[in-house]
Image 1 (cartoon, rainbow, N blue to C red):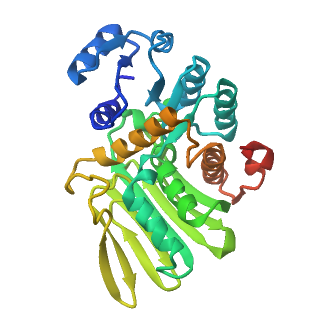
Image 2 (image 1 turned 90 degrees about the horizontal axis):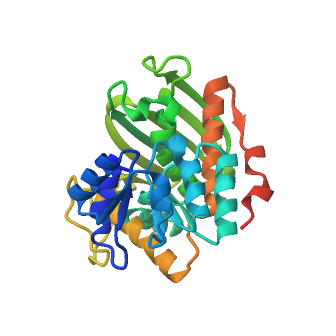
Image 3 (image 1 turned 90 degrees about the vertical axis):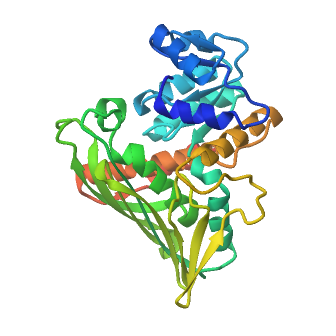
Length: 341
């Protein structure tokens, strides 16, 4: 689509060997053509169906509003295209299941675009946890808040907006990645007054119980100052990741016995990261390179059907807990039959 994040993806893909951003589709032909010219994309289409009918396109990146993710992911898969869909793939387990059922039938890849998980910063944090650097993980705290005006698409409930879908998916993916699957969730929310009773959540905070007595909390908001935070607290130390989602700082912090070490996330330069700054292209470049390699080599994604269903189950549980005001159990949402390979 002619979305803002598409500009980031186009710039990031320019440095990915073996892949070319070959076409753009929009709902307006003139706008799509102008967008393509701006980004140096060879072709444009005035509808998504036209793009999917093009036999030269191997894979599709779907950065549409969240409410349209499952619909156009399924259509792209049915058209024989591999799909990298922006986060979250879908807000419900049923929709995620449908996407992967079609992907399996079409023998195509369906990948959920939580780009931060592929970055060396995240890999280093996972390695530190695995190596026992903070002993036993006991608590995960995450936050992601931004300040966007009323009327922004991220605040439009009818299009899948709201803090927990747009932002909470990052926090939940971190809680699950480091702490495992949630077992029980409690949450509270503030609805967006600009959206009315049917609008999305403006702010949300949640507490989660994970297996093995691990606890987690996160908060998200669409009307707070920018906050990007992730702490992993163990019985013997703490890991702080100051820029967990866009991965621009180039370091994380490991605290043990009152001493804090600043660890470079790419000390040898092997990942080819850019200098720390405001540019967030590295995370998207690495994600796109990972997807390209999987498509080219016929590999199996690290994060596939089981992970996507677990993510959707966590999202559903948090939204239900916030809506009802009662704790929500995740057992039924993660039916083993749904998690088949």
